[in-house]
Image (cartoon, rainbow, N blue to C red):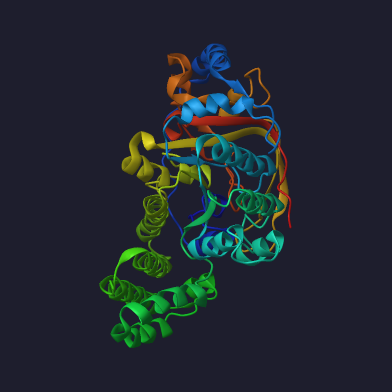
Length: 453
């Protein structure tokens, strides 16, 4: 969400969530001073040479085939139990396929057993049922139904989901799970409410009438964007309070405790957090930022809950501005999911960002537009992060930013314009210092648009 229409949706919940913020105004983020151009020019040859020495070439961004080129990545990851893998745009084929390639490698070589995506908690539950073989159907249809209108309604994610399902059929003793770590936008359907009421019916039947009465006033939330833009703030605040009260009711319904209680509590929490987020005051810039903080905090909590509950090592997929430690719009996104995860896990969390020098991706003309369109950008200009990164000898590569020599580190710690797109492509370009934002960077020379279903 953002103020200026040119900056909306870079790290959006999904296309619909970005639209929510289109009616709001925020002051533009402050831009740090940049070294004089002459000084930057003098540094660049040394920066490129240092990055050359530290970079590891990628054989491919496509899944399948040998993965010996990822062995250095294993060393960079070390003992991390959560790896955040970003994307500089929400509509790039190579970013999406690279996620499947890294997931396969981490599952087969590093013992990872979960893939978390910047999509709703309830969608994640439904997709996990599919990959675990509890439901049938087709991955393409499932993606259309659970991610309709979002950046993830793409063939690449249908392929990733189908790979997980196939892997699980062959490894029933050690299956990989799919997790939606985001709020329940654009809808909180009946199935999520039913999961909570079914638990309370058995564990605390005396509390069931009150719970059902409260949920009757909330369910179903079929179109959260229409709800936020068309429902008075006072009513939304009242429903947020009611959702919080139901969470407290479920918290007290301990029953015999155990796994069933933990799941019911987590599902009720997701409902409450979604209604709290939907109580955003679109006329208050401070509240917009507070709600984005609530969202990144909730995504963090969902990842940590899953890890505690299952003990799984987890690959987290989201926009660069969520998995990283710094935002290119710090006014609107004062804290990121990555920064919260680093606070909670220390070296147990690793953030990997993506950059690209040129190419195509899917985006929208406006947040309210129905269709995603293909945008093609030219090679980065000399003032941009990607221009210098693309001078490295490898076409596609990755580099551990934590161990680069001082000259390269100084350049990486300086803000420059950067290619960064979510629901729409911002103009002017946002600025970001890459060094403090990520632990590892994957740079691609050229990208192509993701494949629509």
